[in-house]
Image (cartoon, rainbow, N blue to C red):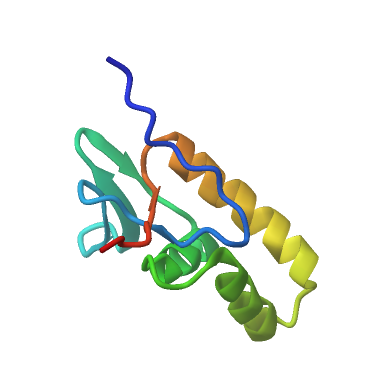
Length: 103
């Protein structure tokens, strides 16, 4: 049975790492790695920065605003890149979305 947990990333998304994935600094290699069962990704410096913002609380819009201010770069360009990167990770199962809890 196929799992269809993939999310569609937008400015309103609040992405986070799923329970089975961790972002960790590999002391031996001196690089950040994204670990999931039987899979390892070595994201680049910018991707690591974006992933560190994926806490399930911040929206993609909040992350983009923060990055645009930090790098004094056009928001639209950052938004396009961030959404594409997060969507790619979501499609590979490295990202999920925080859901509103209903009581």
